[in-house]
Amino acid sequence: MLEGSVTFYEADDPTCTPKVVYAGERYVDTGMGHYGRNETGSLAKDVRVILAPVGQPFRGELTAPSPYCGF
Image (cartoon, rainbow, N blue to C red; front, side, top):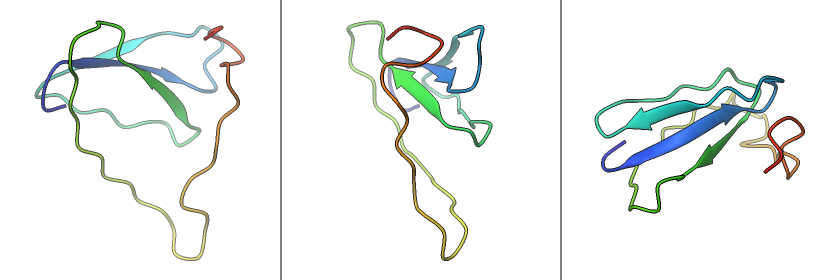
């Protein structure tokens, strides 16, 4: 995160446990997908680095709303 904070939720976490990431921190998901939300109403800026296997899909779309979190 460059500025502000974002709250992340793992897509496969039935407890919907939030992980808040603040400016200067980083987030790495479990590989099963995640939801990222700016829950503060303030500006949040980040830089994303995505690694994907050669010849595989770059990303997958998750169902919305989250099956566990209700948003």
